Length: 152
Ligand code: IDP
Ligand code: MG
Image (cartoon, rainbow, N blue to C red; front, side, top):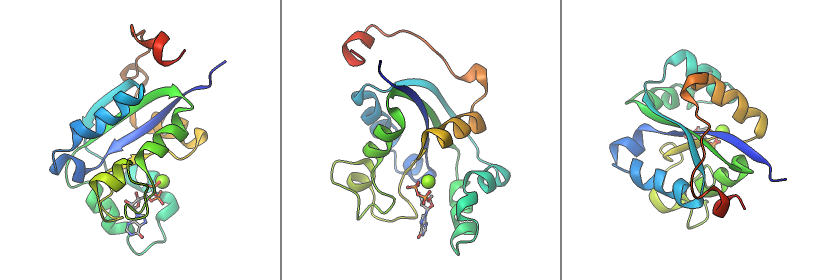
C-alpha cells in the first residue's frame, strides 16, 4: 500500500515579489502532488518563533523573521506518495548554490536567506506544521480524475 502523506509548503515573500508563485506551484502540480490546502496569509512573529524555533540562537534569526513577514506568504498542504521527502527533493538544499540543478531553489535562487520555499523536513514536523497554519476546514480530501494514473 502506498504511503500517502501530507506536507506543508510556504512560498516565501521573495517568491511573491519575483512573480514566481505560479512557476513554483506548477512544479508541485506536475509531479502529481495533490493540493489539499492553499491560501495567502500573513505570518506573525509568534508563529515564526515556533516555526523557526530550531534557529532561535542563530545570528540571522531576527532578519529571517523580518523577511518572512515582508509580505503575505502562500501556504500549501500537498498530498502524495511519500510527499514529505518528495517535496524536499523538488525544493532542493537550503543553500541554493549547493542545491541540485532542476530543483526550485537551484533553478530560481542564489542566496540562502532568499531561497523561495519552505517545506517540512520530516513526517512528524509535517503533521505539526500543517496544523500550525491550516484549520481543519481549510484542508480538503477529494478525488481527481487523474488519481489512478498518478497514484497507481
Ligand atoms: P530549510 O528551509 O532547508 O529546512 P532550515 O535549516 O530549516 O532550512 O532553515 C530555515 C530557513 O532559514 C532557510 O530556508 C533559510 O531561509 C534560513 N537560513 C538557514 N540558514 C541560514 C543562514 O546561514 N543565513 C541566512 N538564512 C539562513
Ligand atoms: Mg527547515
